Amino acid sequence: MALVKYNNNSISAVTSASSIPVGALTHIKTLTASSSATLSFVDGSSGVVLDSTYPIYKFEFINIHPSADGAGLTLNLSIDSGSNYNVTKTTTFFRARHSEAGSGTELIYVDGHDVAQSTGTARMCENIGNANDETGSGYLHLFNPSSDTFVKHFMSVWSTYNSNDYARQENMAGYGNTTSAINGIQFAMTSGNIDSGKIKLYGIKDS
Image 1: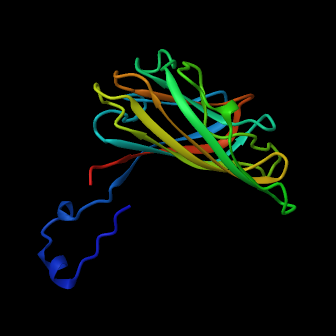
Image 2: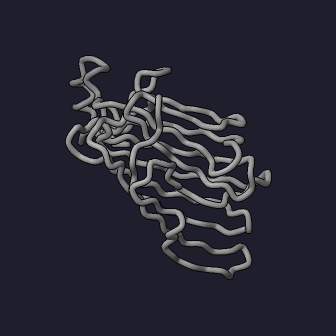
């Protein structure tokens, strides 16, 4: 979020509160999981904005806790306001990890977690533990979803507490291979439910 600093002269020149610039990051909607099979953000539904209002949308995932041990969070996209989540996608996936025991370090590409021209879900993270203190947190950027010219790029970064006591950083990027506007996005675990956690949606304004 942009930080605006004023001196005494600039403050005295302000004639109304609307004259003060606001930050570039605008909160739109927060969804809270409670044994949820899916969590979805659809433009125009329940106060959600996912259109040309913002060129970039950011999703924050806070303490996502799965019901099934070792599950990861996935996404899929819609061009028909959530009637179907089946946009063709191509993605990449790599991770770094380090165990609590100080061993088991690695940095690798995980070809089993990428997709190539698939209409199924795309994995953002993997193997989150379901013990009481195990969760995953991260963020996702979706770029210019309302474009009717270009494919729809997205990228995510996660920190997860692995079910085998590993700290992991997991990175996914790709694109929805459609020139139709994306107006819905859905999140689900690879198995089981999203037991708890929050997903926050923000719009990022033009600089």
